[in-house]
Length: 439
Image (cartoon, rainbow, N blue to C red; front, top):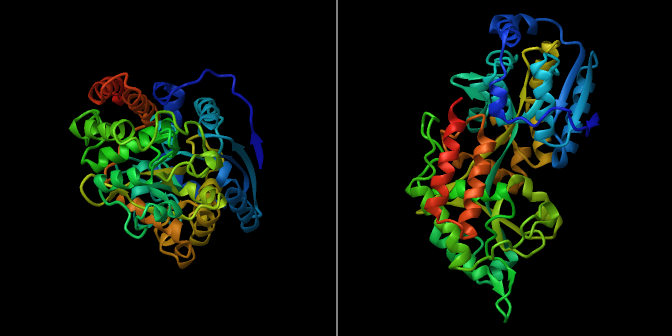
């Protein structure tokens, strides 16, 4: 596997800008990719060179390397030419140029919203019925698969997903006289836990945040989204045409974040900002609880923390979550479709799904893998698979999701830094988001 660290000599482009890139050449490519044509290609023997662009970096690299090694062993007639990219944005810039010029790889794995943007631009193959032995609707976790769809058609296939839950330091919970076996099930219990878990010295200086609201923009919008859902709200309207997060439920969610910091003083503005991975304040034992994903497990365990996890509580009772898939997609201009589809088929097989999930600490896309005894033997990871079932049935699956999340994160920051009220911050954010839904 080669690692591409170059900076593309093209201007940074948003997904919205990509959706506007069209023309006769793009249309001609799309018209040649009907399902019938695709299936006739699958009938060919899978062999030759397979160009694969991957974003399986960081905590996923070892699992990605293992997957590729197993594929090479199973299919010696296919020469796998794999290129690893350090993050989704870097891969997006390469794909943006390659797809638009019909020089794309045969296969790539990327964050779901980028792939959705390419699909809206008519640049990807429709994969329903194209992968031998795999029925997408029957075999793949529907919560993850929802992020691959435009209407009833699927243009990508999730390899894995992440979910969110409430993580806590069991030692701190015990010290505070709380019961780790009965984690919070509603906002009031979450607030009570956070207050009791907070440690300040005699001068009032924060030593341990009872609950760390966020350390970066991603964590800010993640917490807001969970609270929004927990209050009964949604990010967008059912038809995905209007922002709805600035309604009463959203204001209530953002007010809750504000009150945790400024009223309950379970954390301070800016406390722990910037630290990620092993440097996250939870893993430095400077926060007793926070919103975590399955990718957080190894960092906490390696830091020597007795990790407890639970679903993230709703306002009244019960749990909520959201998922974040990374998915395979085949460009319309792929020159070796049979090999690309064979790789997806291999990666979505039961053994490979279980192996990838356990090595990378991610939720497998295959429903059978989530129920496999080998996967369930990892109790923490198995819980995150359960958390994915708490995600909403109709998520905000739009190609401009990243831009929307960034706008929401800034609204959260505006309110927390007392530059605007929660209502004002969200109203302004909604006005910025609405044009992004016109795709």
